[in-house]
Image (cartoon, rainbow, N blue to C red):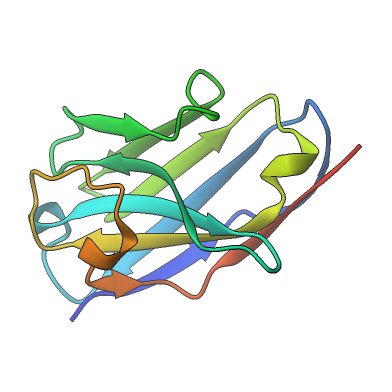
Length: 125
């Protein structure tokens, strides 16, 4: 079992930046690939970014590529999502997730095994 806790969400103006963090506990963090997803009201939960165990493989939703950056620090058991040039359409609850296939960078949410509770990101225009 892996426990995940997100932090760093908040209210920001369009064009601003936020950095989300997801702290993991319970198992060896480097055994898991990690992903970030988001869910806006009335919408399906969608993939944002994924990173394999070493950080050497990355995957992004096309609409965030070049604006968002996923990274991890295995010594701190933490994965990050740096979000720059935020837009109102980025407003959502952001979730981190862990995948036992440590070298994967899946975009499919059903392939993730553990989820955090989410953190709200609101971008005002």
